[in-house]
Image (tube, one colour):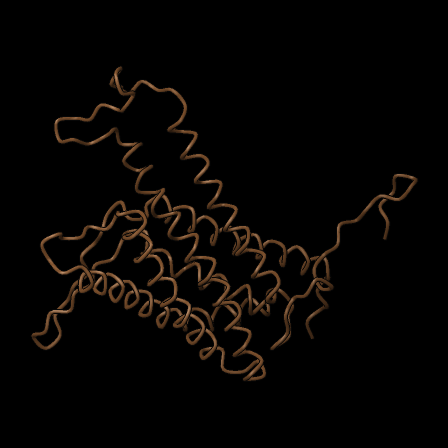
Length: 273
């Protein structure tokens, strides 16, 4: 018979895993908003002689990981903590926007037209690299913030809706059903806002607009959907292993009562029990 595990060990593990999942979520979110639409990759492929276009912004590549993190947080730590992380992600986006703004507002060594105060461009008509990234990131972050809040809250809400409906069973269903709906909301919002507000998509002015926008939306959604379907196996594996590692029973969530409470010193300077 295995000896009982010290409850304090589970407490440390629960905090450690919460910090790890939150860190991956927020770090991925920050990186993808900086990379954003700085480059588009062509993942087009042929099926039975039919060419399937798939043009994806480089910032989209790590984005499905954020939904895996929120699904793990929802499954293990509950809806409230998953929503808390989503709100922290919004604050992170605002922080990125502030850093980009102040980085461009402070004086630097770039050449400026003394008559207009406008940055001088090179022979190709391009501004210094930072300002190129800044302009693209502003558009991407603004678009992603609006889409992000809608999609992530939608994902968390639908995840728990399906969890209640199935009484905690069929993890594959709530993982894929919540992600499929939230991803179409996110992808459509990002593409439309990025184009109509930021004017930052590589649109061919000589071709019809809406077929191009539809290609961007369909490509982004197809990529995210494929990744979401592929992450079902890892999600099952991680949930199974983490439940044992964290000392959580099946279909149980770590509510506030099960998380460690800091030991506060009493009036004599000793830690209270």
